[in-house]
Image 1: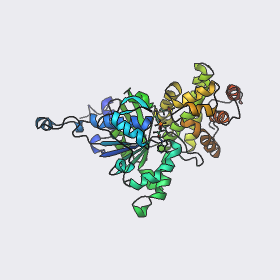
Image 2: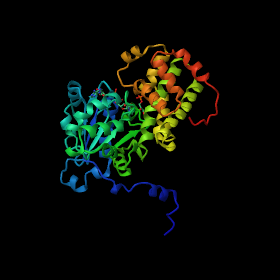
Image 3: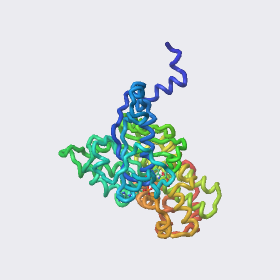
Image 4: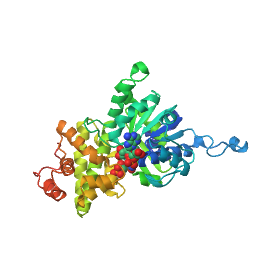
Length: 397
Ligand SMILES: NC(=O)C1=CN([C@@H]2O[C@H](COP(=O)(O)OP(=O)(O)OC[C@H]3O[C@@H](n4cnc5c(N)ncnc54)[C@H](O)[C@@H]3O)[C@@H](O)[C@H]2O)C=CC1
Ligand SMILES: O=C(CO)COP(=O)(O)O
């Protein structure tokens, strides 16, 4: 009777949620066909088709059932705004601009029609850049099932308001889809909105490199359901309930990655980069804790995991933007050169503003903002950071 109780396997089983009790979704709409939205829609399809319940039974095969793809529990729709590119994508099964090496799985529905993507969707994934999400939500609300689970993939802070993406979603949907029309107040929308974040470079996931991630929601059942929907053979989502920490970690690491990129562009070595990563984690953690986030989130996949991946990888757009700065390019030149979103460039001033409001010191973020706004040049970065007053490593603010 007691023999199983203390084994590592029994411990692990106690900590995991019984999968049969976790709700499943029937239709997912992924909104935004850039590099992450496109790749994440593949993850959802692969998760659905790797799930044992989607495999044909012996009876299906014996009776000439349509085979492996016949009983998928989750139908996945990818929506993008541009008719021409979505039509081409549906024909070629390739998103040439954003993820050229990825063959999109056959069961994925590709559309430019928001109503088609959203009608009947009980899982809605928001894969739009942070600064455009607010403007798109009213159109999304027109076709949204008010009971649908919402998942934010964006890693940015809204300029002007300093709101995190789950806060933007809750605020706008409460306005445009209020209770009297079947919607909710902003707390209600917050409860059914979660965030997925972690060391998730889209190009590596498109190539099926083994990757872990985090789904954070106030409601552990919602986090578990979303995690189950996206658990693919090469993609392992963990769950937590720290929405604030998970979002803050995801958006601050982009600013830190810009700074590490600048170091690289200046040909500074690994000591410099490790120093920025480590002190970047310290200032990000200060902000997250001031806003109610948890320290364990910052030392987990969404925190240090994503920080290390983004700051080390040439695939990161934020790291790339920083490197171009370090090489002497201007913000305008970088914006012209880069065709994809580098959220840190737009979020950095909003992060700094939020930090000021909360009395949190973020010297690396402050230095990045000073470079972005042209107050200092990249040559001044090191003297500025190293010339600060000496202090204990554990100083809390
Ligand atoms: N690419 C990656 O490796 C990862 C990205 N993210 C986050 O995901 C979010 C989306 O980024 P990506 O897909 O990488 O960006 P991207 O630059 O690859 O694509 C952006 C997409 O948004 C669309 N878009 C832009 N403005 C729009 C508007 N007004 N209405 C509708 N669609 C619009 C573009 O057409 C494009 O399809 C960002 O917040 C990013 O930080 C998170 C994890 C990994
Ligand atoms: O968030 C990411 C990896 O987790 C992607 O980073 P970039 O947006 O810098 O490419």
